[in-house]
Figure 1: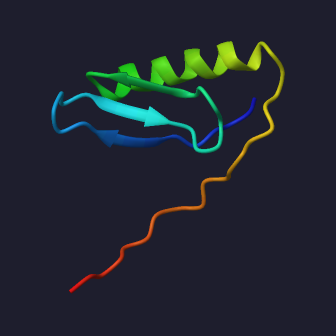
Figure 2: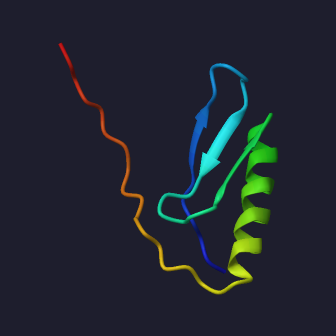
Length: 69
């Protein structure tokens, strides 16, 4: 079983959760709930993997707070 890290944001205009896997072209989805988003992302990734293991273009490292005056 392979694990991918998804970045999740909330769209202020629609209120939907938007998720994507950094560096994995096409691995993105949106949903009204986090559970629905998890299911959608799993389905998208499974579908993309049918074409073979992707060569990831980036690797998620983490988040960082940036202070600005």
